[in-house]
Image (tube, rainbow, N blue to C red; front, side, top):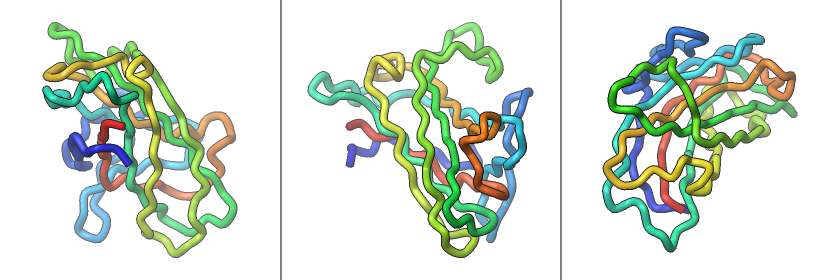
Length: 167
């Protein structure tokens, strides 16, 4: 359990020109809908790392994804990927991507009723995250990895919030 740095709500997402997830409203709450198609859909969040977050005594960051599924999925997996990128001051395009590090997590979907919130944690070392320091402007790309068959959960996955924590 890391120390919370910031929470990114779905309404603040940037949708890239290629393979974007959809911004939708489910039960009066904005969410990002990732389809179960053969194309990896993604979304980008841009933010400044809080100045005091880089503590050399701590090993890295955690990315907490809170999501729900459109339908129950017994014994199925969902594959989430996350990439950090330091922003270059003269290029703010969400499609010019040169990620410093990437981690993935294949999460067994809890076989409960639809729209039940679940959380997955993706862990980064500082090196994997590109070692952003306080006050640096970075982007975080979240992707549902459906193109390699590891994600076999049926239906849309609705991302409700994304939290960045320092470990």
